[in-house]
Length: 425
Image 1 (cartoon, rainbow, N blue to C red):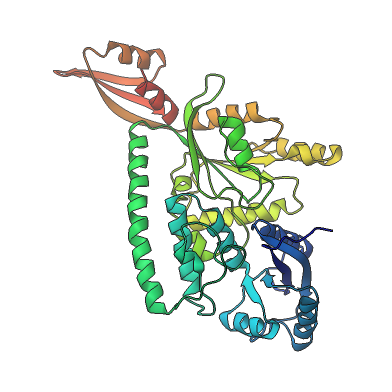
Image 2: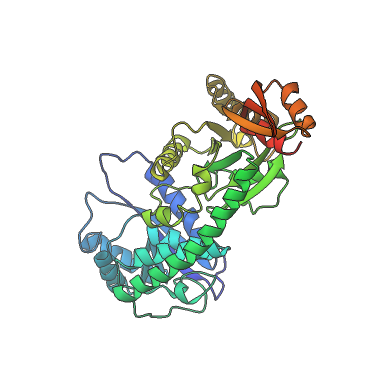
């Protein structure tokens, strides 16, 4: 039996199982994910978890009177201080439940915001989380976010120095949002300048996306040799990481981007707030969708990721590769079945970012995919640029050439990889 430390908050996780026309997920797996989310927070002791089956949610309290009293008795017996409800809870329901149970309550959106608040490390990340939290808080004047007074750390519901009541009327929130938008605009402008600088030396951008805990950061570390935090924990990495690398075996130089993990029912406030960060995905020349193929709901998770990519406005023309990760966790029979399925698709590659299996094939696939996209451009080279002109001819990239008083005018057809290599000649 685990011993609770004095600083920990005892919490209970509830997953309301409400049958709807689009219900596809196993409630037991949904509860497991909710518990994993809760355990991603420091100083939180998850004392228990339950699935609560509901025919329909009660408009005022979510749960019926009998279930309300049953849960109240259990929470008192276990000395629960915080209830985490894996789903949406209206402001009225939150207020009524907190009064009925005499404790604090967070819904799924609030919990994810709490995690993001604790994890944000860069100035941009902190600002984006604060904006998302304020947008969420604007609709519910039930409890204030102490996060607004701190640069780092949680929002005050668990751990930290304790909860601080803040006067949170809508005018104050709107003024705070305006201030944060101005600050974020400056940070985004800096990011745009960096992006513009990269465009001058156009290394292809390869973005890793996927459900949280699919193994993106482990794969990123495997390819780049970096030391990005990678744990078996939801949202282990939050702020985007980018590295310019040269792919092994004479491959091209690329910029590899590791993005925040996606999750089902990702709060709309967070999708909006993190749009600036996720612009790297929109700018990508290639998207590698990393999937935890060992997870029982890998297909559902993949659909959630694709839905968010569509929400962000990722073009259908952007090439994508599906990386079926965590082969090392499969038993021999399941592994054989996955390899057979993957072999039937050209856009799928089974890998293990932990053991390195399939990484060489991935590098080859990235190189081949990036090489497939070519554009025609005109170049002006001076008469002294014989080395660059010879480089272009050696690779068969010149389609036409004329001369003027300044030198050579060449029409070339090349891909981003070849152009990037040309810049280094």
